[in-house]
Amino acid sequence: MEANGPGTFEDRSRPILVVLAIALAVAPFGAALIRRIQTGNDMRYFWVALAGFLGALVVMLIGRARTQTRGVVLRLSAIAFLVSTLLAVLAARLLGASAVFGIWAVAIVFALFFTASQVLYSLSRPRQS
Image (cartoon, rainbow, N blue to C red; front, side, top):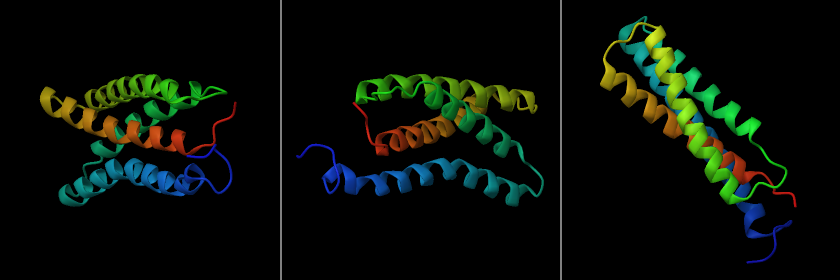
């Protein structure tokens, strides 16, 4: 493949990565909306999703390097996943959830979505050398 520049494969795939990143980031909030509609008043999934999203976002923003290689993004994504999961678990516990397996399962799934979203978005950005 050619070097990264206008008209190259990487340049054309950027909008697709951004759309996929947005879709992955919105999915947990969609699950929260479905839960809200089903129960009529349960907003806990929304707050858990928000905590997980902010965790992944903050890590990826703080860790954004000037030259962001795939290795750097991989390490940041591991940290983002961990922080996102832990913040989602904390939010669930603060909201009164007590089913340990359920809390961790939801937190891990939400963190996977948010981390994947942040990674795709990071990879869609042009890399500077």
